[in-house]
Amino acid sequence: MILKIRDPGIVLAVLASLFFGIGGTLGAEAAKHIHPITLAAYSGILASMFLIVLSYLVGEEIQVRFMLKNYLGETLNIAVLRFTLGRLLLFIGFSLIPAVQAILLLQIEPVFVLIIRRIFLGESVRPKQILLMVFSICGAFLLVTGGHVANLVENVSAGDIFVLLSLVFFAYGYIPSSVIMKRVNGTSVSITTNFIAGVLMIPFIFLFSTGYTMTADDLFLLIIYTVTFTVLGLYFWFSSLKMVASWIVSSMLRLGPIAGGLLAYLWLGEVLNGIQLLGATFIIMSSYLIAKEVK
Image (tube, rainbow, N blue to C red; front, side, top):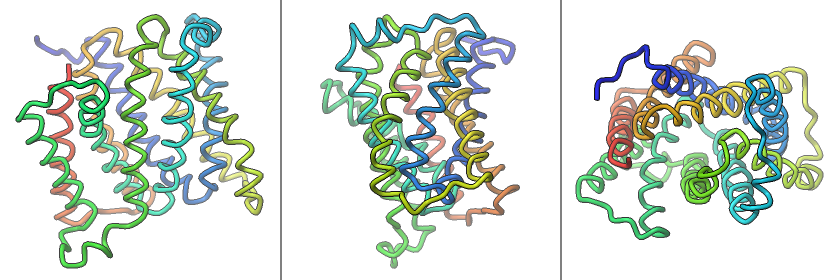
C-alpha cells in the first residue's frame, strides 16, 4: 500500500497528531496553574459542549440516547476509568514534570495497550512485540533519568509515576470503546463520556480545590487546551479512522511530540539533554512499530 500525503485520511491523521502534540503541551502547562481536579472537570464538560456544536456544524448525528440505552455499562466504564481517574492522574503528573517530558512519556501508551489486551482479552504477544516493548521501556528509563542511573530514585519523580499510571486507565479504555464504536460514532462517544466524567468530578472541586481561584489566563489555557486536544484532536482522529487503517493513524500520531516539543521549546524554553533525546527516539520509534503490529 502506497501512502500519499494527498489522501484525506492521512491528512486528517496528521492534523490529529499536530493538535494532540500542541494540546498536550498546553495541557501540561495548564496543569501547573489550574488545580488538577478543576482542570479535569471543566475540560470534560467544555469538551462535550464544543463537540456538540462541532457535530451540528458538520452534520454528524449525535447518538447519546442510543449509546446510553444500549451501552450504559461500557459508557460508564470509559467515563470513570479513562476520563475521570486516568485524566486526573495525568493532570497531577503534568503539574509535576516539564511539558516536553510529559508528552514524550505519553508515547508509551501502545505498550500498555498490548499488555492490557493480553490480560483482559487473552491476545497473544509475539516475541517481536516483546522486544519493541523493551525498547520503549528503555526509552522511558533514559527520558526520565537522563542517564543518571546512580541516582535512579531521585530522578524518577512522582510526576513520572502519575503519568505512567494514567496510561493504564487510558489503555484499558480501548476495550469498551471498541465495543461501542461498532454502532456509535466516535464524536458521540467523546461527548457522552467527557460530560459524565466532568460532572462526576464537580463535587471533588468543592472538597479539594476550594482555595483555588481561576484567573483570566487560566481560563484561556483551559479553553485552548480543550479545543486543541479534546475537541479538534479527537475529532480529526476519529475521522481519520474511518478512512485509513488504525495502525496508520496510530503511526501518524508519533508526529505529535515533534509539534508539542517544538512548542515547549519556543514557548516555555524547555529542552532535553542528549540522553533524554535518545530515550525519546527509542519511545517514538518503538511506539510506531508497535502500532504497526497491532492492526
